Image (cartoon, rainbow over all chains, first blue to last red; front, side, top):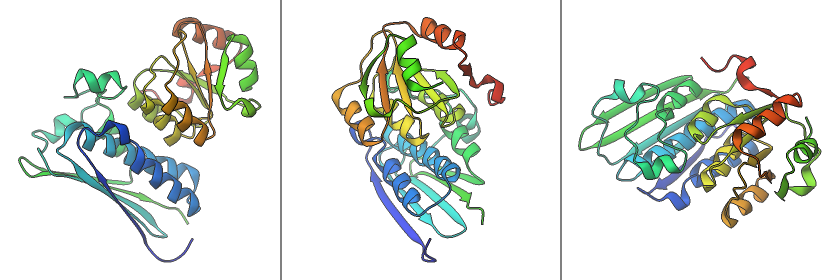
Length: 143
Length: 120
């Protein structure tokens, strides 16, 4: 793997279910190509995929930024609102505000944010009502 | 258990990845909730589902799953199949329900992921 940092940036549109998974799929392919160990790649793929689905399902649109260097993968999922009113509640396993339509696709089980946290070494949610939410996940790459 | 053995005992039709039937899996996991799949399975697991949305293939792709078995005669759409081929996955369809499919596989020695202690 080169010493340089690799940076990926994907725009994710609200309710764009047809493209759901594109950003995560591309990210996973890049990580594979860089020779990142498969278990680390899988964890990063889960975080990116859940983040991508969250933006599509719950937000007014946003973006996913993935920064990769020799020591870590940083995944930043940023959206333009509406914001999470109660983050503690959103982090509870099984809690979901997703619609029936989303549940029919296999999502909205209330496992998204807990899954992301579980796959991360460092995990942070910042949210402001009316402004938006930023979820930052860092996964360390062992030497 | 090899994928070709699974195909045979489930009377399954293979609709993608026919040339990759000699891969082996250690566990099976049945779900229509993709976040549960993302939470619990590992790459040595075959997914049993009745959900035909393309998100099933995407989920399997993220987890490096070798195969998906659609139960109750369900079939994924063309876009899903294309995505599966692209990712080197095997897709099978069995006429049996989820419960019966699980029973047949369990009887034949394919265990659930419970013994890995991942479900708390």
